[in-house]
Length: 201
Image (cartoon, rainbow, N blue to C red; front, side, top):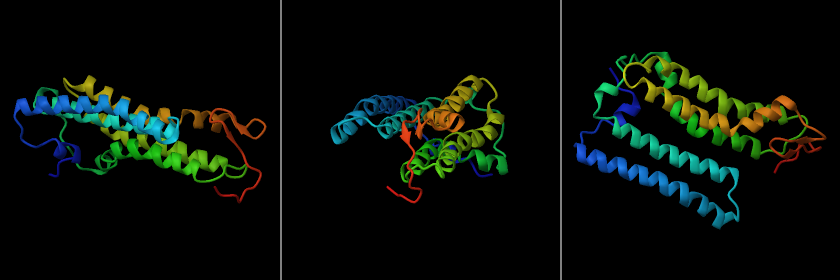
């Protein structure tokens, strides 16, 4: 039976001391990412844009997830007792991390690449909501059946926490989608609707 990609990534045989060193390195990388990525954006653009904060969160979350995976690698008592089934639900769940990482990015590109107008803003904002909220949640649901055993609290915390990050990035978009524009202004995202429907940035 084919192993899930995440398990293959962490399945290299390493001794306990090497694992501890690797965990410390990943945690230090998370700390440095939290500091250096915003600094780089500030030095390059004069401010830390939402893309800069999103990039920071991505690298920090990636490092923390890697450290967590290595920490529990040689602790089988925390592994799920549910066997990998390799069915269509598992194939959906296999895209969970990719959806959480790239969904918000593609959603941001979608609403930034086009000028928002009264004719297209709902389609563009709906696309961002689908990519940033619906897709991560959809791919996370099949993984809930593996949240079992002694490690269930850790598994559930990671599943909910990581899924919440892309959803959080689109909360303002969701509120504007619900409330609509006020005098051609989407107040929560501070975007102004153009009167020229064909204009491109």
